[in-house]
Length: 124
Image (cartoon, rainbow, N blue to C red; front, side, top):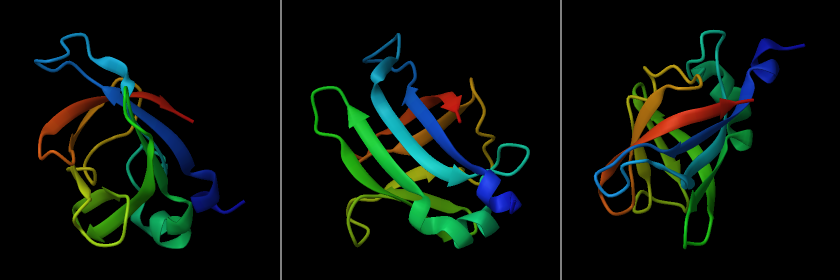
């Protein structure tokens, strides 16, 4: 089996502690598919092969779930995109450096321009 195929993972991020939600919130977050290397980092070569499979669902309590795609826009730039163009893109802070493993944290700048922390709750 091709290593890139076996590295496609579903990753769930849930809102971590914020000023407004000191306990975090499991009803707010993202679930996305991406190729990961053996250490849990995003695999750019795998992404190039399987980018059509790299989808995202943004779920937020009280809002309609948004469906989109993970996009790689440069050496260190990853975004979640929900429509063509950059107007709706949600940049992911240092996704190229993060290890996607349960308990790790990442930051995403959302539609409202606020950067929020998210906790990795599963990688399957």
